[in-house]
Image 1 (tube, rainbow, N blue to C red):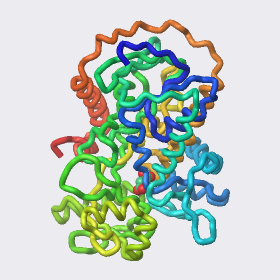
Image 2: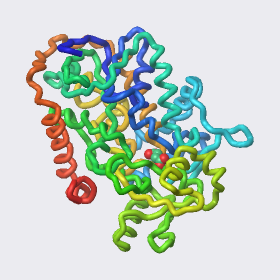
Image 3: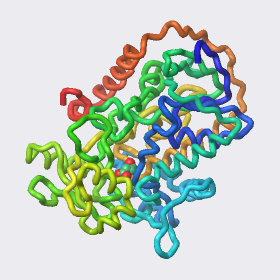
Image 4: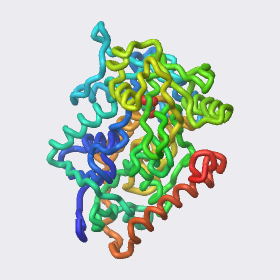
Length: 440
Ligand code: SIN
């Protein structure tokens, strides 16, 4: 995009479920440009295994609400939780209408599964690849929309703003060429920060660019130290992306064992509680992993229900139904992020944040399993609806953009990383020392 200055109605940074659904919910008469850092299928939404929560029956409202609040240590925004749960049946119906398939049981009804801290089975799933099923469908439809254009392997490196009003973004393509995208509305959907961690379930290029730029430009952030460590990822000696062993495997009966082969915790407590129990056990035995096994299923059953996880474990030499599979906690999700209201609006005018990038308070201190895809969809739609209904004339005084003023990639990446890590450290030194420090 050599020295390009592109103009569009809406620019969306990120092509995960939140970015794609926002794009699809913007009316056809508006031009939408979606930029993504790598290839279109290299976003964390593709990796989501467990499923997507839904209010399957109104009688479940208060338990679903309480489970979400309790997992979040009651630090959640109750209004955001209410909106998410109440919107869930309509959102799921939209997905089904768009062609998304969820697994059914022998009676033809949905096969709701369960994960930690859910007192009811209320999670819809597509085998163990729910994120892939949803994202592929949304992507296929978005590709057919004439008003949506995709630009891949392109990274946002700055926000164009003046007087707390956002005019667009500066980005850099894979060849190091810079360009500016001027838009009426800008949606940040860059995911979380897993790429900044030694071990994470996220793709390595998911490095919290939206957070760094928010810090740089004074866009309000919230709860940047509320970072979820998933209890069970497949243990390997190498660092980098950890393969997730979905909590739904525990929901379907998997147990955790310590070095002595003993159970040591209730496997279906909230994620942070199970992670802490595992860390204690690893300390006790001086190990860097514990074990998971699924003794109540046959290999054939496990292969059918969890094909992806079964194969990945087999590739490492473990039959999950017979062997003890070594697992270890790893960074998984960002509950904090760019502070938004329940319509995705940030503290900067015309700048929105959705999905894992946004912090509207719905997850509190610790996200309830399988609320992430739901939250992304519900609040992405609300942001798109708000943008569509905003008829106010925007000030057209675009500030000058000097594309020669940006440092080279390695300098910029270090600057972004330092901004984010310092913020996490400032908010919670103990968490930083335990999980973020490269020396730890
Ligand atoms: C999992 O399947 O354990 C992860 C799903 C989620 O993050 O909610």
